[in-house]
Every structure is written in C-alpha cells, then in structure tokens.
Amino acid sequence: MRDIHAKDSVALLRSQGIDFARNAVAGVSSVHFAKLAAASGLLFNKALTWVTFHGAYDIGYLRVLPTRLEEFLELVKELLGGNTYDVKHVMRFCNGLYGGLEKVADTLHVDRVAGKCHQAGSDSLLTCHTFHKIRESYFLANDDGFREYVNSSRSVEQFLLTRLVML
Image (cartoon, rainbow, N blue to C red; front, side):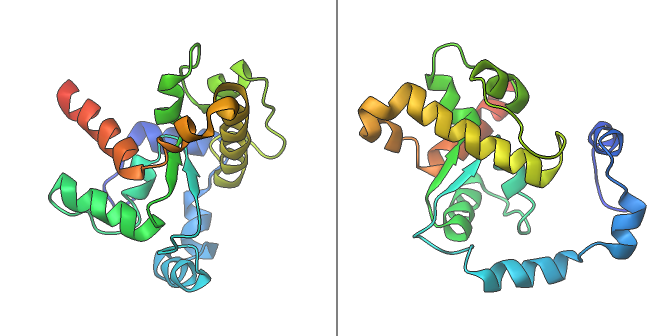
C-alpha cells in the first residue's frame, strides 16, 4: 500500500476477507466513485438524513482534509446536508449502551441480517437497524429530544474534541 494507513486496520480488514490486491485491479477507482456519488444526489442534499457509527473517520476520507476543525465541520455540513446522526455519539445519552457496533447491536437484540462485520454494506445495514432500535427504545416518547442529536457538527465536533483532549 502506498497511502498512509494503519497497519492494524488493514490486517483487520484482510482477516474479514478484504482483498486489497483484487480491489486495486477490479475495484472502482476513487475518482469514478466520487463522480458517481456527486451525480447521485446523495451528497449536498439537505432533504436526506445520514446515519453513521463513529463516522468522523469515514467522513474524513471524502475530501482532502482542511487544516482547521471549523473548516472540517463546515465540510461535513456541506457534503452531508447537515442532517447526520452518529449512533456512537447518540448512544452516550442512552443508559446501558457502550462499545462498538456489534456490542451495541447485541445489547439491543438487533441481528446482523446480511454479510460479515467490517464489510461496508453489512455494517451500514446493522448501523441503520441499530439506529432505529435506539430511537424506538430510548426516544420515541420524546422525538424532539432525539432531534437535538441530528446536528452532525455537534456529533463530529464532540468526537474530535474528545480525541484531542486525550492526546
């Protein structure tokens, strides 16, 4: 791999069946993917709501990172339309929920219905089902309380500031 990467993350993905050599030859180029994503109407769309799990890292791969946190937060709002729930952030306000996606899903009795962990489609579906279970279990009686967590800037900023304090 020629790009900067975390060796342990690459090893984890390989252990889950990701074939980087095959992807380099037969996978979709990032430039082509970016064009398709932009043309799809999924980005820059304020009518959509995005759900992530610990998504600050994922969002950081969408564009060249700005040098300042404020610029990054504006980039997130611009790309995703400002309506983003980060399940990792929301669950901090839910008694008894902690850990990674698998742990939270297990706690809520949400099953993985397709694929393997650490595969984008499978994890996305599990994140969505977990999100809906949290909303139903913790916030249904107070939907306005739930909506206060929609602000992706707050979610991403809180995550990043927590990491900066730990450094």
